Image 1 (cartoon, rainbow, N blue to C red):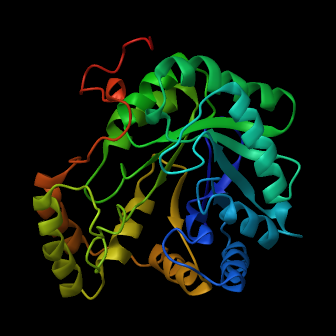
Image 2 (tube, one colour; image 1 turned 180 degrees about the vertical axis):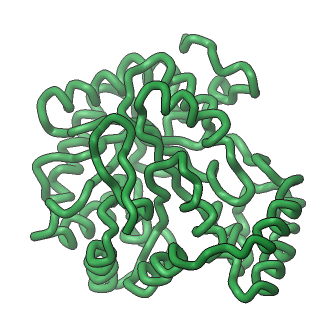
Image 3 (cartoon, helix red, strand yellow; image 1 turned 30 degrees about the horizontal axis):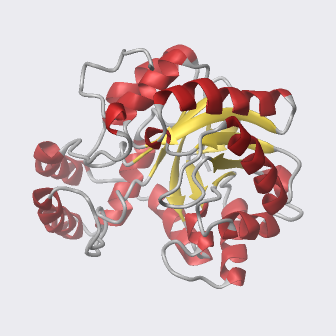
Length: 320
């Protein structure tokens, strides 16, 4: 398993990261033993980056991951998040950052969190995230409870604005480095490289859009983007492969992020993702996909507070 250095942290992490949302039954119920086997098989295959959050199953994912890592904690880089405990409730106060850390340490059965991240910062006010949540996480770092701190979210220009104004070790953005989005590479990577910030990506399948399956009914991509997916899938089948395999390999081939995080609920899914790493994309298929996806690039939606929806070219406004 290839590893890359995560910014200036010195951490060497697997290019394929284990996303823990599935362990919290986020995508449907799983049997606890299957989750254990998925974690163990991932470690055995060289995956050493594990990313979870209190939100996933409202603590269940952290609990299951903590149990699965018993006896193997020192083999992995363990990341979790804070400030979003339910889908509709956010709390970016310093008190919540501290309390969340203590809760996660207990659920994960560990004495330190390797990467502690402010979750989905676009849902907080700029003042609170920048001047309260991030400094609170830094204090936990000074106390030795977390090794490195970072932020996560969807809109890369808002993530960039925070990174310009606050000292960060890592940034995780989802849905922005895949077959139909490259904003993480164009809008965020240069600053991350300049500052030594470790960059991570998640959701290479764009919430199930870049697979053979029909996207979920709640998917927020524009209708014409969703309608174009069968063409991409057909092109992949014509070349003897499938869209999900190509989408994952494409994301992993991008050199900006240190890791690409994928949710995995079973050892079978772990194995399929590892195999996708070893499945090259034929040049002819890549050229065909680039032609098909050109009109679709970076047509993502926005979610979060309206003030954090920053237009292109207006990402250097000091948080107010």
